[in-house]
Image 1 (cartoon, rainbow, N blue to C red):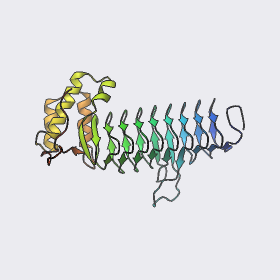
Image 2: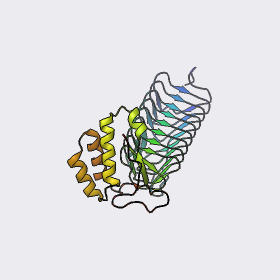
Image 3: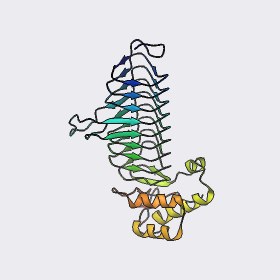
Image 4: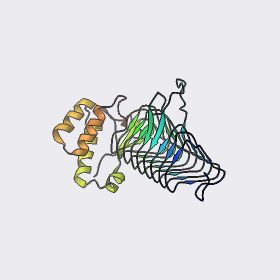
Length: 279
């Protein structure tokens, strides 16, 4: 029903549910069974479809599409949806596709910032306080943990996992898992730790030094992954170390290797050279 907050050209299904103080711009579309929480803003020509569920205080940018069918040839139009938490900013022309199998979901947590043209494929799970910069492409079933940062134009292969507080440099391409706190770059490489992100997140110097030591065990010791993890567990302690070890142990695709130094063939063991020095 038109109101001062809903533009008369907006198309809203009578079977959609809108919370209090929801703003809907010109030409926007909200389809059957969609739920839009209190204080959301749906800007002009955005589309909310496929039974998508939005929490409170979300901003959906001009021309963004939330809940469209997955780009999967095996999709048989089974019921699925996108579920989004609270206070996310989803900018112009972002696309977030719903799950590809019956009853499955593509999920975003709270306080994320998805910039212009980013694509989140079917069944991705995005944590909270994640930043996804312009034109990032996430394949199906990608998992991105809290406070990760994905640089512009990065491409992440289906089923890859991006750890908490990890950062991917712009235009990188990852088909391997990127562990928490690490910096991904180029093609399936790491180039050190996300030091700025760790400091901003309040990780103390002792924690950062422990993570630096863990990085060196993995990439500079000449050990294989299993040996490096054993050494890390023996010599290093703390919640962040446990999170790092568990992430690597649970990896199904393997983790990114260390970046090769310019003009060399890199190092041995679990990886080559990386800028893992410092705190």
